[in-house]
Image (cartoon, rainbow, N blue to C red):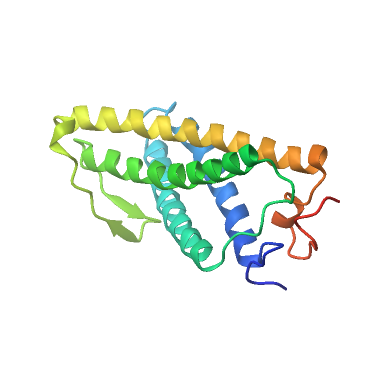
Length: 197
């Protein structure tokens, strides 16, 4: 099994990061939509918020680890003959995805830190996480929490849009361009990844 990336394909570690993050972010998005529609005072709602926060910190740790791995293992080359504007869109799209995956959990952490309720965050009911200092420019705690909640929702929706564009681009590569961009994110055994199938 190929562990590290090559110029023609992704290694097992990069593929595992990709699909683990995809499932985790999808689950967090769905859970976030569900829990915000529930009674905030219900005991089950509190538990869902704690799970959401716990997995949000897991997502933040994973995206930072993924960036470190990417720095040590450059991505495979883009397909030969790919137009410059598609190459630019690919780079900007990936930068946007990474940015949103970092800013989304950070904004959530700031949001709970600003809450006037002062509810502690305890990851998986084991590891306590300290609150962050919230900028005084955001106003009092209630106003800061409301502002950061809006920011958190904006980043969540932005990430959803970027993911949909990412999926659409992957499907275009597979079904229209007929290259192996999508297949090399599924298997380490894809040869000649810069060529068409």
